[in-house]
Length: 464
Image 1 (spheres, one colour):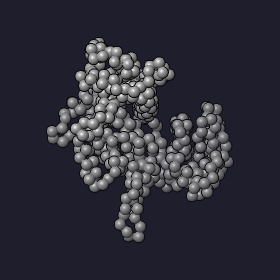
Image 2 (image 1 turned 90 degrees about the horizontal axis):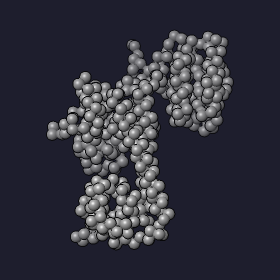
Image 3 (image 1 turned 30 degrees about the vertical axis):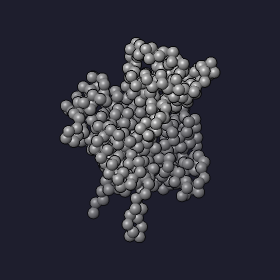
Image 4 (image 1 turned 45 degrees about the vertical axis):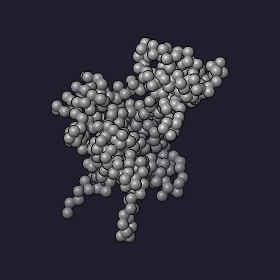
């Protein structure tokens, strides 16, 4: 009976290691464990039986350090007659990435080990101790147990997309913090600017001036007329004139509430708020800069996305440029996966199933054993699906009726989206909406405002 490596319990990665270790020349394989760091890396060289051939040694992160590593490996190859070199590198921040690239240039087989895997090795075998030498032994143990995945040359576009999407997320988070600071200063300067609670038809409701706090009109008034006295000095006529001159598009209701709330305000005088007014202006400047940066990064994300298979995800209602970029970047090289469940497991959003002694299996929380950035992207994607995709909204309501919590619903929808994305990207097929849904042209036009990028989408994903 012939064993199929495609049925290995660790999937493709296990299959690759299985083929390597079952080869006729397995004894000719040199095992190199590397613990990457910012300034000084550490390495150790063994054989496939775990015998230490070169004791742990350090080499710096510059080119001279890497030359020292290669020299040690070559000496081991010559001394022990090795024909193949397998390097195991733990994912430590981003410091391991250059080592992966340099080792691949030397034609070494590179196995990337998740930091969580080596941590478990230390716990179970090495009694929680953590030093550089112990880390190297844990990496070696992980390698010999077939852990990790075999690295391929990084796909440049996907690497660019990952860098851009993560930077975009950082900028978005920073922008949100800046908006919160602006809210804080406006609470001191003109508290009612963010809304007032009033009784309407016997019920208390919050009446807002602007639907969005950081809208164009709101930001303009906060910069130039932040205090209640400024609004009252303008008056209704001044606000209408300002709206026309600056294209603020102030509604009658907004103007009425601005003046009424300004009259009701309990704010201090402008003279007593000079510190807050200064800090408000500085935060508005900061917000303007961050907004410009977000716009620039997102435009570059669009450009790169449309050169990858991930651009096809824009045909799904509710999946915008940000969601498509984040999922595409975190998925990476789709050719490494045979089933969508592998993506879900890599994200760590797979449910933990417990079964023992013939008892009925029960499902607990998600595993959280995958990549945190990927898991966060799946959660955000599920949240977007619930709000903007009709088909997913229907599924969300069904899950809610069964007593599922909102966080569970977001994860479930995110997993559904991963399965859908896997099928679309593998088959190179755009999303097929239900009857009565929006046309593909209108869906894409709402996400890609640039006509050239719209044309690029259809040329790449529809007409080919």
